[in-house]
Image 1: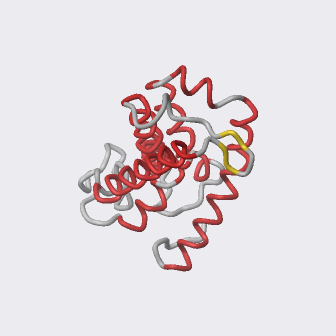
Image 2 (image 1 turned 60 degrees about the vertical axis):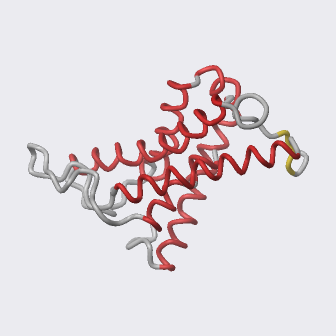
Amino acid sequence: MLPAYIPSPLAAVFGGGKAIDGGRNMGDGRRVLGDGKTYRGLFAGIFFGMLTGLLQLYYLSRSTTLLSVELPSFGGEGITASAVIVIFSLAFGSLFGDMFMSFFKRRLGLKRGAPFPIADQLDFVLGAWIITYLVAPAWFSANFTLPIIIAVLVLTPLLHLSTNIIGYYIGVKNEPW
């Protein structure tokens, strides 16, 4: 999950600039996504998600366990096309899920940064899972078993809240949620 966890906070750190929606509004008069979704943030998030996955591949080439836990591969040994595709789908999918939720929040009339419990904490996970499942269903099914899915769904909101609080205190987020 690291290639999916890393993009959103680093998109916030390195984001800014031109909004993906170009400042356009939908027929309801509300922004498509809002100023918080920028090209710089999108590309930075994908870059750092990919970098994280590639570093994981490097670690896996040295050891297949961490703290006595068997680590999953991204498909095959070393850097393969299938591994890069899985890593990209996790990174891009997490940002896609976040953008989709921003679109949905704008339709509900919620402003940028307005809390939307549970959805705010899991939108990127679901986006990463959906995109990765569509791109690599066999890999996804082999690696995201029911116990892993439950663990991710329980731990992610705690990790999300922790990183948002840190982001708030270092000044890259306007709200601590």
